[in-house]
Length: 296
Ligand SMILES: NC(=O)c1ccc[n+]([C@@H]2O[C@H](COP(=O)([O-])OP(=O)(O)OC[C@H]3O[C@@H](n4cnc5c(N)ncnc54)[C@H](OP(=O)(O)O)[C@@H]3O)[C@@H](O)[C@H]2O)c1
Image: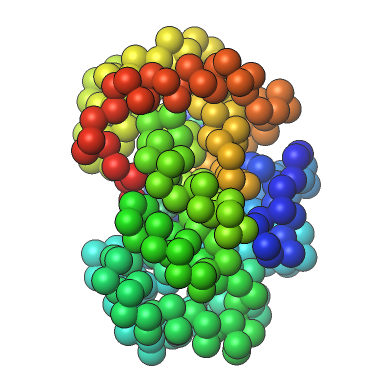
């Protein structure tokens, strides 16, 4: 699998990474997670992303592949150790959350800790970033990053204190392509594309009940890309994200052991031909409404 250097870090990351939210929220069994991750690592995937608040995701990952820690780069997040919606950006709480993550992930350090989508104000205050810097000094993490979108993501790149940015980039979420990614390239900040396949929201014939999927479903309806009606929809969507200048890895969420193989196979074709890429960009510029900002 193709690998790219993650910004100025020493990490050579596989272009396809694993997003760990779904295994937690959908309460996937330990056996299935082990099958999924063992298979993925055996075939060259080396990025595993999770977070403090994705239910048992960290524990499941630690149990499944903690014994092969050298085979993958381990990314987690902090700020909501009491659950999403109960954010706590106080330095002491962040450090405690990071310590708990390291323990739950069955390791002695992670490769990257990211502030989990705090606001621009919290970033500007600086003490949350200082807490991550302290965690790095204490050896709990090798690198620090910000995970989020919009002006906060832009500030995270500008401020010069983060090694990486995790941000939404997909056929249905293109704000970052102009707002943050050119600056990230200039500053050598590593970029991890989250929600990279737009939650495959084209799969739903009717508006999904799950609110998380709704914005992309609505946008895709309006964008009406031809390719989402064909068998190559997921492949084209993923190749689009990985063709965006500055993106190093795309962390796709899945609960299915066979899914990542399908996605890995579709990436063998490499970047999209420029004409196809430009068409998707042009369609976005034509149709996207001002309110279509980066979705957290
Ligand atoms: N604020 C933040 O920091 C933040 C926010 C959101 C996400 N994230 C990170 O980003 C990761 C990915 O985000 P995400 O899972 O929301 O979005 P995503 O990767 O764009 O979409 C995942 C969905 O796409 C489906 N899928 C994957 N490959 C497919 C294929 N080839 N064909 C059809 N469907 C396919 C999966 O279903 P199946 O289960 O059926 O495969 C799953 O429902 C998360 O796991 C998390 O690590 C971070």
